[in-house]
Amino acid sequence: SERANERPTDLPARGAADAGAMPSKLEMIVEQRRLDVAAARQGTDEAALRERAARLEAELGPPRDLYAVIAAHRRASEELFVAAEFKRASPSKGDIATDLDAGEQAARYASAGAGLVSVLTEPKWFKGNLEDMEAARRAVNEQASERLGGRPLVLRKDFVIDEFQLLEARAFGADTVLLMLSILSEAETKALIDKAQALGMTPLVEVVNEAEMKAALRAGARVIGVNNRNLHTFKVDLMTTPRMVEVARAAGVLDEIEILALSGIKNRNQVKLYEAHGGVSGLLVGETLMRAGDPGATIADLVRDSGDNGAEANRRTRVKVCGITDAEAATVAAAAGADFIGLIFVSKSARCVSVDQAKAIVQALREFRELDCRIELGFPAQGDAPRWFRACADTLGAACGGQGRPLVVGVFMDQSVKEVNRIALETGIDLIQLHGGETPAFEAQCCLPTVRVVHVDAEATAGGSSEPVSAGRLVDGPACALLLDTSVKGGASGGTGKTFDWNIARDLGHGVGHDDNDGGRGPLPLVMAGGLTPDNVAQAVETARPWGVD
Image 1 (cartoon, rainbow, N blue to C red):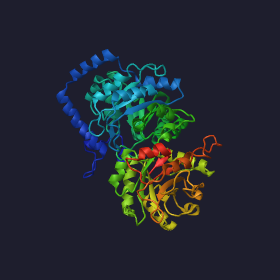
Image 2 (cartoon, rainbow, N blue to C red):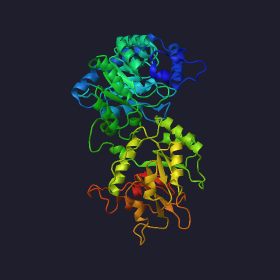
Image 3 (cartoon, rainbow, N blue to C red):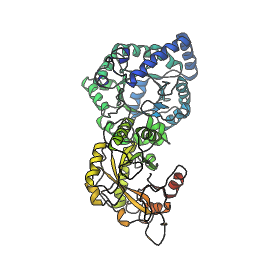
Image 4 (cartoon, rainbow, N blue to C red):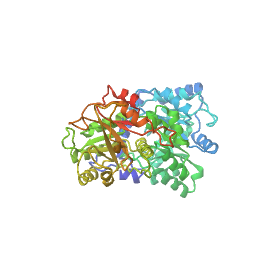
């Protein structure tokens, strides 16, 4: 990882790795691509690729100039240029959306206003292929935009190490290709830039650090993509892009190039960081759009301000998977889309984990979310209960919509505050869930934000003669969230496997006193637990409309 941060020209796959060192994922991918290119050369000659490229160009038109399109967009619009990525999987996240059709997704991106469709064509780790790229090109070919001066561009995103891959790109409809200084020397980069331009393509040259940025400028790159992800460790640092802007500014060439921010961009606040800094012409978004139900709404949320920013994500019911006991299960749940992972530290629970087990799970989840630290959650000033919990829900939702997913929740019950804090700090969890009789005063002494459990009598019914929950448990903070769980008289309070009347959750969250027009108070965000299974959770959500389910 130090090599990735400091040196642009050393290629471990070509022998620069320390003796005996384990190759990084990047090195493994590059070595495999060398084998792939050699095999492709055996099956197809360059002349055949050139003939195919000529036929496709005659049918679909010539490639568009990436630099000219981005520069024109920057002059014509205050919004950042958006490159939308199609990738079925990734080394860090596993399968993302393997069943999506590349052409259909590209058409959605184009309709949503994307100026470029990036298509992963690496087959082993990203499950891509050249046919995906041609399908994307055909899909966008008729979707001209006045703002773009024509149709969206198509980028071949791959680990390009050979001119043969440039010919493949043109033969399957690409307008441009990605060149990575993490795997190419400066001389190789310059040579491939020249060869790409000879084929009518202005390449996107990717850099990850200052040395690579300077090398890209010397090599003649006109469009530079700054990868916020360390390609050896896959950790993300969103400040990488502003640092590279300053390198270009110091070199006096910022007005002569276009810079795109690549990787890790998930919400409007992150995009605002680049807008405020200046010098960034656009951004590339991948996983966020691949998982989005409405790519158009997601792109709009990213690049423009409105009262509905994040509306699609906020409408989605958040999911907590609790009782995880090992790192593999935690990663599976995260890959499936879990927003929260619950680890139980209550000794009488059959799913209680040790501190060492928890540390292993937390580390695995930090690797998944590409941030090697606890998520810092900044909550607003405390107010009345609905307003306070709504603001906290927005903060939690934004964290899950950014690099924070999944947040790790430690579950405690009637333990001392000293023990709770010790375990929380030692394991690296993000939130504390208090499942016993802990008071707001206890919550205030906790070292991390807390989730308050509100026990619901299993026999209670909505509109019944008795109150189903203690009204005192619904008061405002310092807890940042409320979780309803089933309690059984004379028995357990939580972990019962029993449901309660979901209409109680509906009435508490959306009933009288919580109308959206009631002075801005609005609904009371609630997480609902208690006997939820794959068979009944959809009905529970439809009935109660909770903020989240556990």
